[in-house]
Each structure stands twice: as C-alpha cells, then as structure tokens.
Length: 162
Image 1 (cartoon, rainbow, N blue to C red):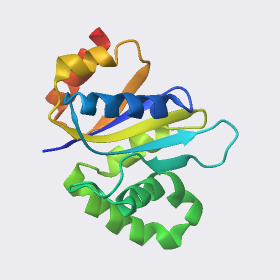
Image 2 (cartoon, one colour; image 1 turned 30 degrees about the horizontal axis):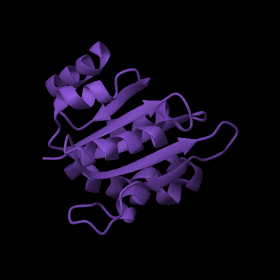
Image 3 (cartoon, rainbow, N blue to C red; image 1 turned 180 degrees about the vertical axis):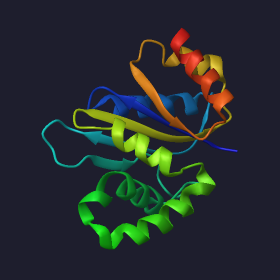
Image 4 (cartoon, one colour; image 1 turned 45 degrees about the vertical axis):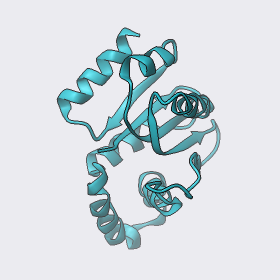
C-alpha cells in the first residue's frame, strides 16, 4: 500500500527542494515515489501555485485530475461558493480510497498558508533510516498522512530524532 504524506515547509520554495531530494532517493532505490505534487504559496499571492512532480506516463501514477481536484477542494472551494458545496462533498468521498477525509482537507487548508509550501508524496518501499538521514537538517512539519495513528507517531518520532 502506498503512503500519502504531506510535508509543510516554512518557505515558498522548500517543497521544490524536497521533491528533488525525494526523486534522488528514488534513483538510489531507497524509496519508490508513486506520485508527488508540490504546492508553493508565495507571500502576497491570493492562491498557491501547484504542480505535479511526476510525469503521468508511468503505471500507477495518479493523473493531474486527481491533484487538480484535491487542490481545488483544499484551496479554492470556499472562493467558488455554495454551488460547489454538493460537488465538493461527492469529491471528498471519492478521496477516501487514498486516506483523504474531511479532517485531512481541513488540516492541510489550515497549515498551508501564504509564505509556505507543501510536498504531497505518495510513496512505498521506504528504506526508513536512509530516507530520514537524507532529510536530516531539513525544517518541515508532517501535517498529514494516511498511516495509522501508531505508524504516524513513529514516523514523526523518526524525523524528530534526525
């Protein structure tokens, strides 16, 4: 099963740097990046910039529509008004298969703000000690995962020790 993890960086370019590191770790066969996307929200901008970090030609990669709907649901729905409300309810239900529920959406919406960025990574096959070592010294918060509470706690502890 793939793990969806959202890492928040305190700078607008932090997630871009992190995705490069993540893809380098994949080249070393220390992690399998099923898919990834980056949200960068520059200070003073009304909306964040989003981009899919993995080409959609690979088998198992999510298509741009997935990220577009997710980011639309997280960042833009309140602006579109009540007509979208019923649609957003249906969309949020369709994300349940990926471990994305209303709490996930609300938490990401509250945490990713102007001046910050976030890396959304769907990964598997992690060599945990090597990945933790590679991200040692990086400043980020794990704001959401689809792991169990126990697994998420262990993940947060591993990165806090680095």
